[in-house]
Length: 308
Image (cartoon, rainbow, N blue to C red; front, side, top):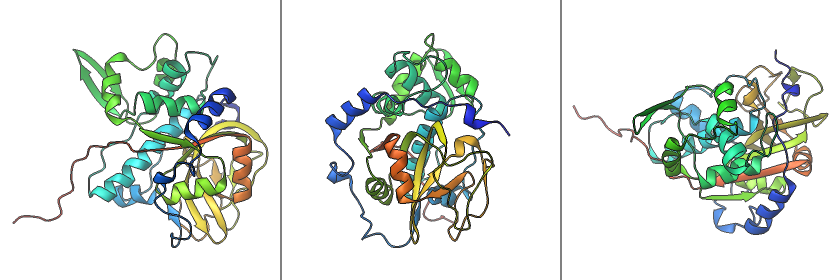
């Protein structure tokens, strides 16, 4: 197993975080976003269940080999939001999103090449998908140029696009612009993260708080890991449970096998674990977190009946 703990990949720009917080306010400040509160929600929520309903199984992502976690987490945010939108609209799954594009936008177009070596700032990624948008994986032909984004995360492509000599190819910017994240807000508490997820909005975060001292980590009998150690990593929060209370953390950037052990009484994807509210407050204390929404997905409609 790769020693993922040495990859790093997340950095904090406190000045940019504070500016976003001042301009946007927190998730609870953005009251019109709130679709559902904890009191209104019944049972437990795993946002990836929408993907499983469409495809038949939870997604699997290849493990990262470079410090590209900010891009990978951002692309999974778009994957989750698209799956939820597909279920709501009775539409077909339209393909995964490019982590390489998110990583390039965060480092070059927004970050202006301030980061030396691998890695990115989650705030830069959020601003990148807000100003430029998301890209689906596939082959694009624009003005005689053919650009292929592989079907799975490609760290070499991410590093190439994340170089100051490149950035997101200019030909792809208008295409990404069709899928901009028009709203975003910082998450500053477990309660805000819980309410965002209950509203169908995953949380994209970076933190120095780890949940392992060595790998593979092992969940307890209820599927929980507990805060210990330090890291420099970005991943996502994609579920909520009520008894015992917890928030589901998705670290599929490291593949399915970095964490083992029981999953508890709720089915969750490989590579994920439950986190206590108190430990998620520690995640936020030592990092940054945001939710994004309002992406104008376009879909192929699922037929609701068959003509004979």
